[in-house]
Image 1: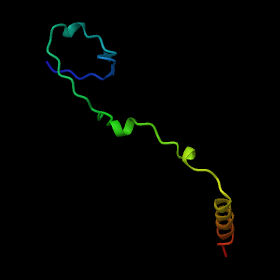
Image 2: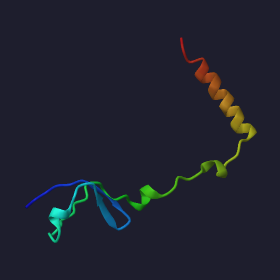
Image 3: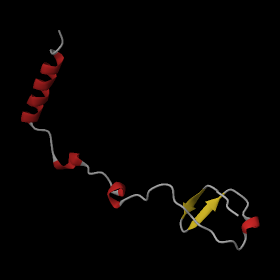
Image 4: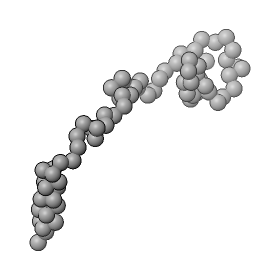
Length: 74
């Protein structure tokens, strides 16, 4: 007999909402449909604000860019 069910993995168990009493003792094959997250995807993002600070030169550039962008329309 073949049957398909949906469920979720929690800790080391598979949780399904269906009644499984009819399948007691049967062989089970589990297929994961979603890809496992790679370690690069689970890393936290870097807070770049702690590596830089505002300077007078940077503020001048910000003002200059605002002026250019503010006057770029005809």
